[in-house]
Image 1 (cartoon, rainbow, N blue to C red):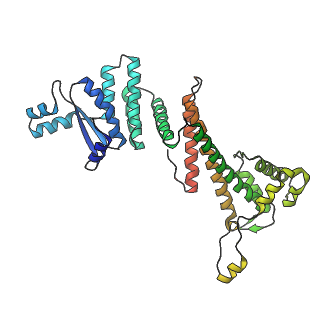
Image 2: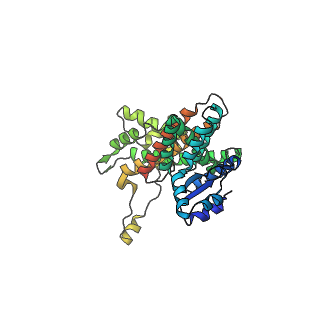
Image 3: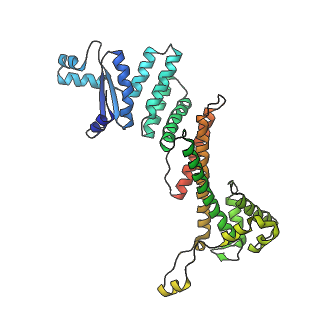
Length: 345
């Protein structure tokens, strides 16, 4: 049987491979299982079934070169359609074997790296077997997701899973802090930059985070305080948090109000340089901070949703999980596009 090393060697010379099968059924089944390796390497696979009791050597001796090439060209078919043909010929009256074969076909399609090719084969398989295309897509997506998650994390190792969870939460907390730091710094001081003042900044900030669920209790309370006072038409300053009522978050507010860094005026004057500050593009900086937080929260939601696939409960709705996953991935990719990041499907 073909090995991965042999396939990689072949791929240096061609992207197109034609496999000749003789009439041996046992050999055919074993060979078909090895074909997925070729698909994984993004090669185009064609299958030719030889006549009964013939092998490549015996058949080629009965034909000249031109006739043999014509025979191959006339009888070749791609691997996926070859499997569909086998199913229709051998298993169409056996529901169990038919469903197993359909799953095997979907599994082969999932091995193809190119998403456009996968879509084409899914549609062709759906039409050929008269099976709902969305059902095939759902099964394929489950296979793709399981493959990706097995690469990125080992859910069977509790210690690693716990460590990853802490890391994710720390990243989310960092982005929450950056967002609230902007609110505390520019929501408690009088300023005006590019048509944006203190009041309009608070209004803009609160509008942008309407669909964001913060996790840090201190940050939640700070945002809630700004929102309640803003709705009362009150614009507060940092001294507002020094009352006894806010003892639990007072130190956090003070810490947040301290600038991340300050460039010495003497340094600016001496070298006659201008250092861009976040206040120069306040709206953009705030928007990007909130986007980064949303991006991390969506990624966490994707991971949490995927864990449901590993749930052994009989009550899990796999189709619903996949719908949620596709919606979250779409949101993740849209946010990544705005941030200029790259994310995988």
